[in-house]
Image 1 (cartoon, one colour):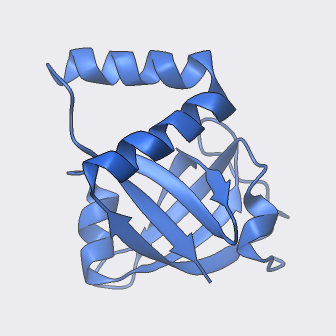
Image 2 (cartoon, rainbow, N blue to C red):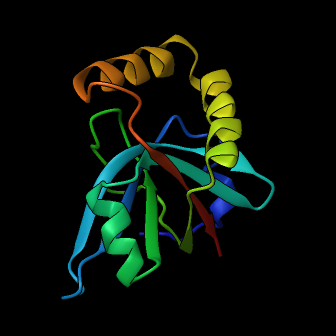
Length: 130
């Protein structure tokens, strides 16, 4: 397994984001990624497990993956620290960036999420840096 700098993953369509339980066991989830300078951004519901785990341990590991989270054995890994941004204006602004990168797919997913959660669920942005 090779290591890579965080910005090298900015052009990936999906990455597997690993956050860590209190026991140190990693939990991986496929996520959309957006590059902003030297940082990578992830959008997720505010009440998701990854947000809860990050409040206890901000360490993350990222690897390129498929839409369903399959990671190739030789996929590089990037490590960093995540900061949770819950400011609604920032979340909305960055949401537009995800919509530009992922287009119809992102918009459809957000619509389905809104319907499933009966309204506009609060989302946060994870800012990931070295």
